Image 1 (cartoon, rainbow, N blue to C red):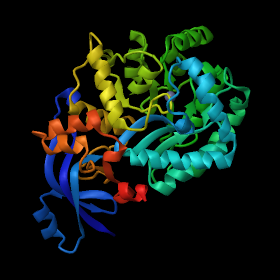
Image 2 (image 1 turned 120 degrees about the vertical axis):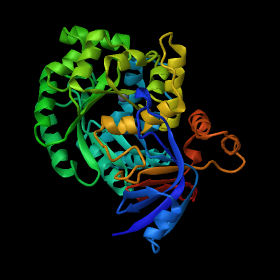
Image 3 (image 1 turned 45 degrees about the horizontal axis):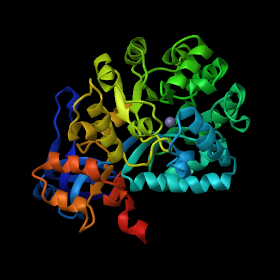
Image 4 (image 1 turned 60 degrees about the vertical axis):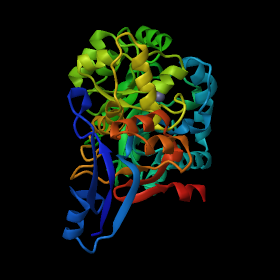
Length: 430
Ligand SMILES: [Zn+2]
């Protein structure tokens, strides 16, 4: 049993700002035993209780580790493909790179860059789109295990409208998925997500085989895309003769362990169906702007009672930082006539606790007793603009807003998952 006391300015959102909750910001000490926060109080209290425990002083602002609920591992190296709408971008930028994942060595190198990149960006928990190849998806799980990233991920499957070398069959998809589930689901902090790429690339038979895979083990997840771009939505409706959301529902793929990305162009009946089934939506604002998909209708989601979280959607999104996604979510709402006025507390909640809730991880996304010590130290280098802003911030709300406005991976000095150091700025520079 190992115990460490961490103390500093701790900022989190234990209560939901969308339903009246507020930011919690206080100088406090956390007593962390075997990765879990066992006590929270003053430093004197912690030291009195455990005089021999080592004490780690945290600088700057300490936040819960960030939770990215939609990001594609095989797209790391093609970030920045600007200027194309979704379906053209897929064909010209994303899918050629995804086909390179057939080479296990290439995939392993990208998996290393991807998992270390997420941790450097302060993301300690992620729902990740794997590759279309089982060997590459296996490499992703190995990289996550090696780095301490808390990850839910799966083999991406499609059997039409992609490049032929990315196609599988319902039978092969089920066999490959079952093998990965037996190897990785429930191992440490890793879990498996059944991952049809999107309804456009899936026959009804493939979607049904995905639902059958769900029965193979408890607590499996489902993730996919929905209602991202008008041309895509029209194509799905024509193929299935129903709404995009209903296509997944008919196959038995909606529920409390399902996270669908985007939902920029959702009908009212679809929102009601998502709410009724407990399906969560991952809002990916940078990607929605970059691919010209549209401004996210957050108010309609909230009024319908749909659960929301945040995703970077790399490589449609333009980087791994959830600070940027929080800021872009704020921009989207500022630009919509019916926009939700988001505060820094809302952005932090979306980037932490809401994501953890979407992933059914109650012990993640906050810094209270019982939570895993997944945390990030935001301490900008001396002499930078953000350091100057934080040094003069009138209070924690303003400091947090400044972090979302200007923070990057370079401002994150240390990262822990389950109480273990997972990244330090110095080690990356070395
Ligand atoms: Zn995506």
